[in-house]
Image (tube, rainbow, N blue to C red; front, side, top):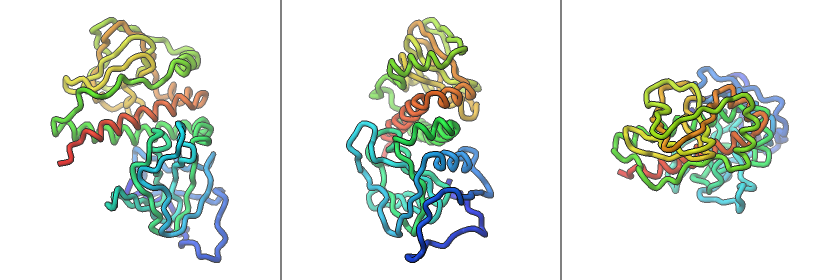
Length: 309
């Protein structure tokens, strides 16, 4: 997204002067881009942040959040994610600059979604205007714009693909250490089964192949009962039990499967298509939040195994 610039050339505003009253409304925001990313959609991000976000003006040089910053609760109370409207934001790890963000980019989402400390520091390189949203508003905004969950998934999945490729090239794919994947706790899983309505579960016996790496995927699977083994190039990368999810990359672009999956025990799986996914999030935003959190944690886990050299 480094080349993303979604303000019109004839409407770009100079950094606000000290005597200019700060803007407090999002009604005047008008974002366009000459070449939108196939993964990141500006209109979707704007709709999401406008539905529940707060407009903030940040002076040049101010720290927006700091690496390893925590917010003292299980739901990261106080943590926010941001959409940059005007100005430039610099991201740093330690003293190293890792990215400079331009208008139209979302940042700070990982800490809100994963409930983990900040992994970088964000500083206003110029005077900035942002839209911010915290976890308390996140669920409501997601129910109004479920496509935003799909977009965030696509970004994380793209990062996962790149990470998996790096690990495969270096023969460093983790074969142990990752806990059994569980996205939905019992209560949410029960709600999901009720909300799923007409979706018919599919059954697999032990040893039965569920999906194969390289084939085109049309749905993801939620494990209702049993356990599934997921492998990449013959190496087991995770085991998925009740409440777990696999094959979610298919929801994004119906690209070839990156992994294979086999039933380890008798299994009952709920196949969820892209349209099913969006409908479920509208009615139950916690479904999307749980899935995003799992992807964020999986990305952190896989990234931690990339060799330093």
